[in-house]
Image (cartoon, rainbow, N blue to C red; front, side):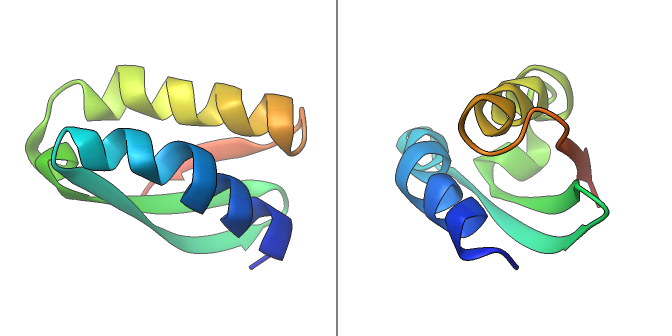
Length: 73
């Protein structure tokens, strides 16, 4: 996994999820597709599959690569 990508997740995304009792685990990154698994409160939240996922993808597009796609495992 790319270190810059992990740094953005750890410093900018994970703390926001942690505030609401959630987290994510990056599972794979191949062909500009990041596959994640939600954990904690995010794992059972209906908003995680839509709103939170789009927020994560938008943040990564802005800070990492405009061509990145994020999907849930």
